[in-house]
Length: 464
Image (cartoon, rainbow, N blue to C red; front, side, top):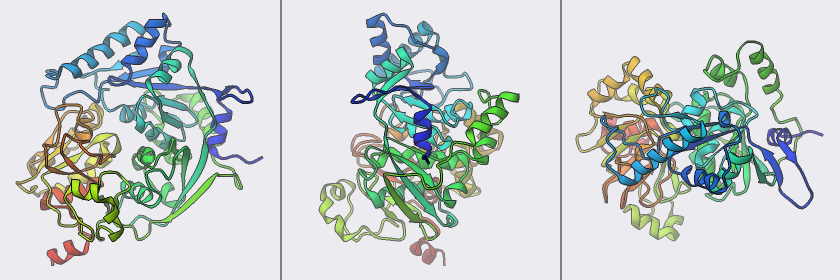
């Protein structure tokens, strides 16, 4: 029989199968952060259970950590409590912690890949909804709740039914100035926030194969925003080249054996999918969200559709109207960072746009690297000077302004164009307004003081 990649990974990890019950699925690796792990550790302590294999876990501090220069001074009592608890729990259970100043600290979905921990064919979990990011490597990676996390910590396995699989095929070649962020926003706008519910999405097609690993991570990262369990891309030479030589990647003969196995992790010709979607991105324009969920997004060269009149609550919240163009809407804040777009390639794109230019004085712009390693690389390449000369703040690593769980928050009533993954009401701070976009669109908008991109008709007219 022919199988898709998800079925292959699943079959290789089933510990026990019994009719009428979920499968017992082995979990290869789990990532932890300070917000969702405390309850799982508490459950282990309550039952007197040890972590079954501490080497299969890695923790980091990312959600609550301040990103200002004096980030060791944590003023929020709840954040300090979370960070302290993680440090104590990791020490007690012998789990490695990427703490502040370790040169390995960063957003959980950034450090896993850059350390070479995320590998093809793995089952990988984390108490975080954007764990699908790791699927870019051909891993089956998904977020779990704290009670399930406790099961994984105690047993190395969980109970789960085999997921259904949807093939998402992207055909064509990305136009200049358009990125993986635009691809995934386009998909979500087409199928809706529940279009992938209960499914694992396998991203296929030449457009996907042409993406770098960092772009593939962006693509997979937002799978959850259309309700999917996970998203993944079959591993290929691009994957292997990214992984080779990283600290936790196999070495020598083990590397050769690993690559030989990884090459089998592709969907067989004629395999079955539960659903298929095909999108042509050859004419895709940069995407921008206009409402209060990721489905409410349009190409920057279009106006809010008349059909959006049925979504009056979202329109009222963001202060926009049907048939209004998103191009030209004034902004107060611009944010580059998060597990979606906080990697070195994202920062390079932004630096190329900001070079020798200055952002609009009415705009506050944060550029927040996804890890200490990304930050150091940006400094080594001189990107930090470009950001600072342009008037942007280049900050310390963390989740930052992705969510209102630390010091970095958009003020009440202020409008932010952001590289993050969610534009929910108050996501970036109580009463804040968020427009999702790619790093390139965020950078161009910060310079102009309003939502824009050079390829949009209005921007071309103004330039002429």
